[in-house]
Image (cartoon, rainbow over all chains, first blue to last red; front, top):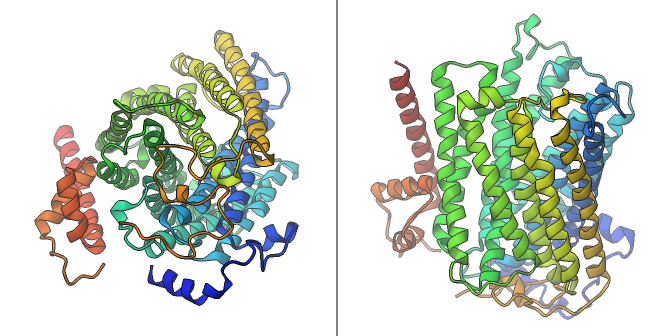
Length: 533
Length: 67
């Protein structure tokens, strides 16, 4: 805070200059930018691009699964499709999208002029495109892209062609980018809040990102360690995961999931944050149980570190281990239930309206809760042993990641687009996008529960005849869901190019600091920190 | 925030705050008291101790069940 005030005093003479003074224009503006809004936009555009690349791979998967038998792809290539779909969506689409939101929103929501480390911010973004190019170009090297699943289990990953090396390098770079982004976010939140904004006055989106950033700093190095060990096993004669050399492939699973489970919360906590901003705004009531939301978020974060082996019940572990991880996992339902209760209580007796952001937030609540419950089903060890590696699990994690994280990203985009662009988005396009997404999402993924319960394994290009009907329905749904996302792009482009002028605060019930700025938000905001009472 | 005028939280108060954070619920009046009297260091240390106690009690429970 003090630092911000000093900086403001020092730069006082520069005020009143043109917003874009001192900045190169054209392409170089984006390459050299240190502005949190520019970098936020870059992150969001990057993740949108990766979302469509990942979606294209999903089309490839669903086309092959439309009918039993092999129609389009060799099984080896099908494995590449599932693996790369997962890697791209997790590391290229969902995570950068939330960092984009953080960049745009956190400084504005806490009344800071920019992120704490503006140049590092530029670097953490510009590491991503090379990583993405490496990852995608692995399709074109001998042996093709990584094909061992997004979890890159050894020994699959230690035996694969050079595509795996490209994948490992890409993950390293993306991990470094995430760590730098997180350090930046933590420093910004802890040091640059406007005077009077105590931690417990911060908007919930800022809180959830603070906790997420700590999770990222804690687990990204674990992933980096795991994939470095794979790399040395592959090329430098080590035997970390090679049983023949005294290593243990199961150790990879433990290390991977020690990263992987907190990663799940990294992808959902910022979504909780967005929904916690949107629901009060459209219910025109303050968030019910703000403090308990903060407490529940920290609780989820802590618990996320002690449940990793629930991904490994069939790998083999003592009964006491199974019970421990089963109990710990089921306990996460308590703070998560507290959150869902608080969102519903916020809506209770509120003056609700259902503009697109609110629709997506309600869709999130409805569909994410279903994903949460199927998660509880998977947490029960004897059931998990039956359904592990079946389509039930595929259905479960798409319910939490698509309807959870992605719907929250859509909700947040429509919510803040007026602030970002200065124009209102088309409500017609937004609503069409929501309803088509919701319907097609369920058409795609709901039948997968039945497929899984009936025993259809995941990651296979061909299947037994009895699974044909539900697969056909799922593939039709996937086509519809993918095409519906073009409406999202149309809505964004239309909004960016013009339309009804957005007022400073288009949403009557919104009360965080960014709405005190004009729309579009000026290039430099809060050079003089606002005072929070 | 200056430390001078803040009332110091007792270990019991820190433990209570951390216990409720594990559950995810906290009374408004209680949390407002926490917000002024708890330091970050206290919360982090108590959080780690709380996590260890939580893990140990779960381990004790599963040992009891499987014995």
